[in-house]
Length: 399
Image (tube, rainbow, N blue to C red; front, side, top):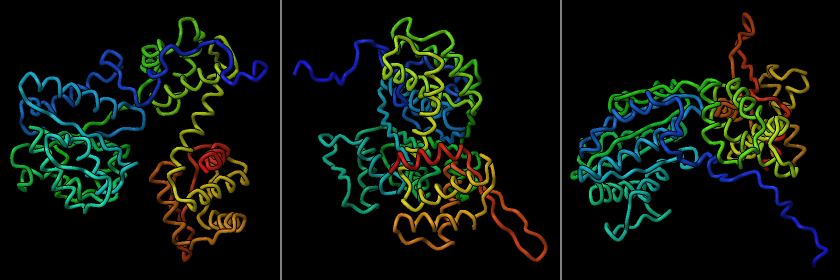
């Protein structure tokens, strides 16, 4: 046994507290950089809740990694503490609409988070109830346990049915809640999301709207430095944080991506038994982050969506240009060959068109309608947002 290989590696430690670099980590207020105005706006919108009154419903827009979810979670947690001083009970439910994309799933999750069965004598099973029954139990829970319920709908544009927005925003007006009130914070990466909503929902939901702008390189550097105590002292080489910040600022000011790259760089240093995190580690981490992010997104897609995306990437490679356009028909022809390769029956062209539209909605591809000429009609050009090699690697990793 003494001669067996030690799979746990060396004793060189890179991380002191890796949790600081997890996306799920909610930092203290002094670690939230460059979002003072946004936090103030959110606080003003939901401030009535701290006195037991109905808060304003809010829609928050901005690109991925601009602090929308972070600020919403932080300010609602602070509201809970402020309300206690006024002897007001605020309950908060956070719904990730990418994971819980149906109305039933979202209502079930909200009820589960806000419930305490010993107080309400109500159970919230994970399945088996109608949507109407989940709503009935949710209203009972809120009325029994809380003065105000704040429901955060993250990536609200991914939810399949807008009915939940109508139900939540009009719960008091319709008499569903009699002892309590409710407020909604909707978060979306799509600035034009509101345009797709029913006029009745717009009037009740969009009471306050805020846009979160991307972070600049200086702000991202400060964010990374505020979390650098995730590493042991002296582990980060001087050029690492500026390098990560420059990469993230170049790609739309995504702080989430910057934090992921820094964490991956530390993991690469550990895997290679290095004593410090170098700029070379950062470059490798950048590639890993791109693949990991796409793999996570693609893994949730149906198998034929992955094949369509792989066909797009292979077609782009054949054209010898990372931003070369691929027509829908070109993607479809190669998609059919990939189906033959895998021994699966291919979908009809109409369904593949729908899949390409869904991929655009997920910001994996871009689409542009082109005019073919007089008497020839229109056709759609599709472009990958990421490099085809990254897409192919992500498709393979997600299988």
